Image (cartoon, rainbow, N blue to C red; front, side, top):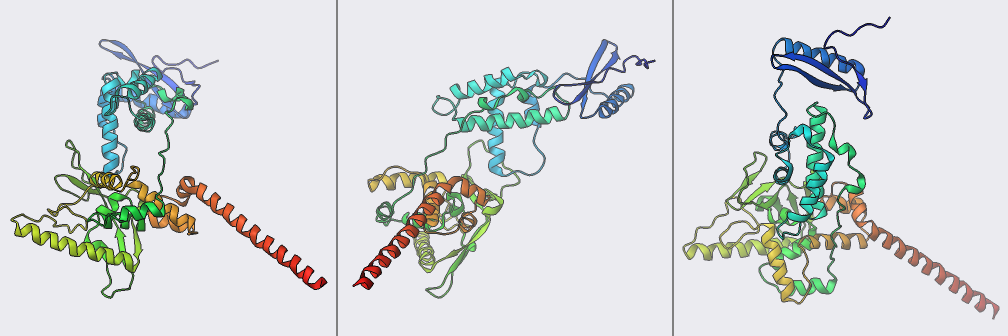
Length: 415
């Protein structure tokens, strides 16, 4: 004979999503209320049911209504420290999400609302008013997916709305076109020979991210006393422009009124690079120019402000941020009659030159601070195919030359 369930015990059932579920009925002064509990096994659900009943008995059960999505997002942060840039981007995306569907109760969010959010972001957000790019929309949806996944795991919501999200619904990011400077274009850029030229030379010689180079301080450099010797450059930080509404995050390495310093982009981005004598001389020239600029500025009554010892500074001693370098490059390219490119394209040019010169991918990946060799291969794999084609053609030419030489030998012997 089947055992009867006690009043309020609830029925444990298996769900289509692979979890077990039960509803616990609780008697309240205002009437009864059902509380849903979920688990990976039937036993886990039974234990959770017992915990709910015990908490209700001890008057420790929180029966408040579900918070709004905006309230949940503001209180929700994955555990562990995050980089400042990640923090800022997540905060931006939470604001974008909350502006559209943030007023809805957390437990009422459905796939319909997610699609509504994506549609809004594609049409109404962005500085131009034409909507966010697929990449930016994808980032916002990723934040929402992670947050709702956490709410589902904590039994804050009965089901994860993203379980009905189809792969084809995900915005398709467009790969940015990578511009690579030719030798002639590099020569044109260097021909300006102004105070900004050393920065372009260093970018093309090292392949650093612009924020990494602009964050360099003189302590990051080991310049040899004797000419003709190699030096060392240590990448330990990156500089970024601070927005007007930026919060000060404890993870930031330092900050000023217009900038903040952060750790490099990836763990492998912290690295040491060898500087050839030619590049060592470039840094020496920068030092001489900076000292002369400082002396001139102070004599004119200015207050030089560079306590950190930044290598690249304005005439006031304050550091330069990547957005300023971008403006510099646009002006420089226009002045020499070349098409506009990003500062990051100088990094692409360096990597491309290295690979086509035969430098192993593992070495290139390490020098430029990529997260992995696999990432380098994914982005620049087409260049290795080109090199393999060149190698095959060279091998074929060698064999053909040997065949022709053998034929000539046969003819010579026959005479």
